[in-house]
Amino acid sequence: MMKVLKFGGTSLANAQRFESVLEICMNEKPTFIVVSAVAGVTNKLVEIVELLKADNQKEVRYLVDEITDIFIDIISESFLDFDFVEKSQLVLARYIIELKKCIKSKIIIENQILSCGELITSELLNLYFRYKNYSVELVAAEKIILLNKLGEPDEKLISSQIEKIIKGKSESIFLTQGFLCSDYLGNICTLGRGGSDLTASLIGSAINASEIQIWTDISGLQNNDPRYVNETFPIPELSYNEAAELAYFGAKILHPVCVLPAKNEDIPVRLKNTLKPFEKGTLINSNTKQKGIKSIAAKDGITIIKIKSARMLMSHGFLKRIFEIFDQFSTSVDVITTSEVAVSLTIDNLKNIDLIIDQLNTLGETEIIRNQIIICIVGEGLVTDSKSIRKILEAISDIPVQMVSLGGSKINVTVVVDSIYKNIILNELHERLMRISYVA
Ligand code: ASP
Image (cartoon, rainbow, N blue to C red; front, side, top):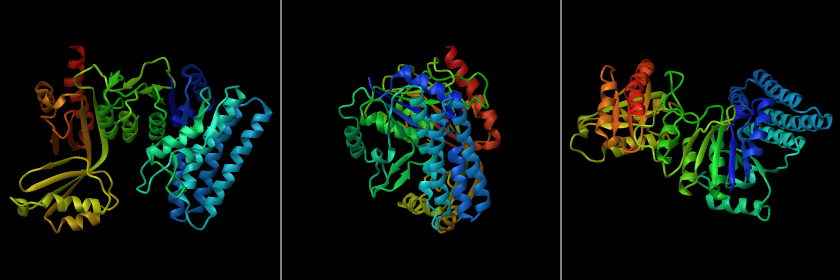
């Protein structure tokens, strides 16, 4: 029974949470523990990088002080023993000196700066575990999570690195940093924001874990967005595909790409709440029994681009030319609908929008519609379930919908609307799909 437990930043936010993490580890008996940076730290590090790019040193100094204070509070509340206080202060000082060196460097060493959060957090947790006589072995994520030349995790290499480390140590517990990795040249880099979930999944699949647990401050993936809808509840079970769709389209509790390595090895992923460890949470696996609509999620910050052209009529290669433009500017498209003379698609990365529009204008007339949201309704078999489709269409009948996509996969329907309708549409859908389907 080898388990991988990953703790997110909110699960490590203060000394009490460190204590809860220890209790959870003692109960769950993991093989690997993966930690994010303490809540808020990576945001501040990202801000530092942005300020350095804008050459704003003064604000950077404040942020370094704020980060230092977050960790000092944890140290002073976690350890009563002077020896451990001193050891942890030394660890913190060492990393803060490194961070300051990176900040002063002539070139911006983004990855080194971003890595500080996870490095300090894991070292402090390691000391805390030692202080509580819970013995773990700290492993540098840089040594085990390796990327290939394409910048993707090299799963074979990851497995062989981990095997070397755990060989002959069947009783050991390993602690490592989420988010951090090495590129194919051996330089430290990251898996992208929220990437610690992917670290856990990669390790889980490498050691063929019995379960991967993702611990946050929410009791599993909810059946709707609790900030907008009353009486939401955690979905007991989800398939890998359902979880991936929901994570991609707005459910913030899980990183969308983390589902894949677990799915490939058929390893169950459990989403649990550090504040309420006794609650069951959500289990993502391949034998879900529960059918029907599982959840509704919303993704903000969406822009629609419409391209209209008579040239599209009866011609071939038009869509290819459109997608080549998005590819050229490394901008991914989420939802797409087409008619004979028009294509509508959505993007959430606006970095190169002006350049994209310039090029699209050579193909046809373009229109940009901003401030949209994608609503995603997910459930195995949904697309062929005519009753549910009717209810979805009824729920959105009074709302000016920009796009509807059905049939892209068997398990989801996506609707794109202006963000001002977020509250109404989430509640309408909840009323018609969730209350009725769960009571029935
Ligand atoms: N600390 C990183 C972030 O905030 C990675 C993670 O938490 O998964 O994005």
